[in-house]
Image 1 (cartoon, rainbow, N blue to C red):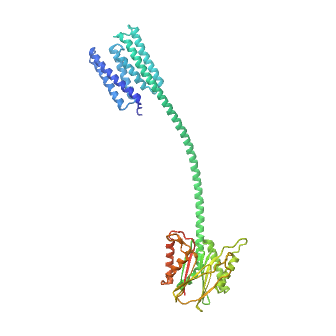
Image 2: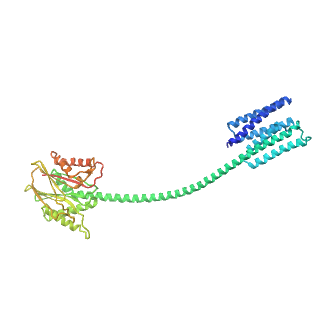
Length: 476
């Protein structure tokens, strides 16, 4: 265990008493020489002087209670030896005894009651010795009787000064100890509060862990449900592609193209191609919504178109849309509210026997490129959706025009033209789409799908696709 370090006051007291005792011992050497007490006495006082000066140096370097105790023992031995040599308690021995009292207080500072008792006993013993030397010289002889009163006064004053200083210091130490005790109590209180807080935090941590486990359990359940849902949707996508694969193959076989980019896995856009009596019916639809709801409507719409064109032999685009509208209204009827479900569609019929084309649109246009004049024209559709009770116009319009080999037709849903992107985050727009189509004049129809797809991706950039996209290109 390391020795306890003295404070600044104790250090000063020990330092100066060691210096004083060293000087007293040096004076003892001179007295021993003058009084001819011999070299042994001079040697002893020389050792005492050297010890006190060494202790003074150690006090300056690293003061502690061990050095104070060593100084006390050293001076006690030489005080007794001085009394024995000089045969009285005058002068040097008295002052050394007072210095020992101060050192004793430092050594015993951790036991204030013992310090006080020893100091009083030591002081009373000195007073009694002086009074005995004064009034009982035959029992306590002294060399200079006239110096006893002076020594008594000096000893009493010195002792009183040291006692008062130490008492004042003891009060200061007591105040500091109380302050330290209060700080310890405050720290103990804070420690208890901290312990309570730690317990609360631990309880909260356990609750959080429990909640985390529950969240993880729910997350696992949701992930599993999501995986099942994705599996079902992917399977629905395969079914949807299988339903439309024959129509897409017919277009591709004729050197035309189909761009199909669903926003989600399944699409609300569809294409329908049938050939009856050398008349090709090309129908593109955009059902309400996207994803699963839109995909379900595409199945209903294609089923009805098969029934209308093949079974009912309804061959006019205008009548096809009219019958489809009636069937969709019946299928999607919902009493008590306006029916907003349905689809937008463009119906193109190309009669290879008569070399004419007929078109009717339900809110969807047709872009026609005349190969003989190298001109584009946009044939607008009727402002009337299929199956929607909130229509503006009551009947679908039909347009008939002559076609020649090499003429091109483009049907498209609004997913392409309504997509936000570009440098200013604007819609692509119908005008921009028509200009892009016009720039494809010298490109084969079968190669245009790649160009248009790249155009859409570049325009969209890192923006989210807002709707399903489908573009059909047909060349006669």
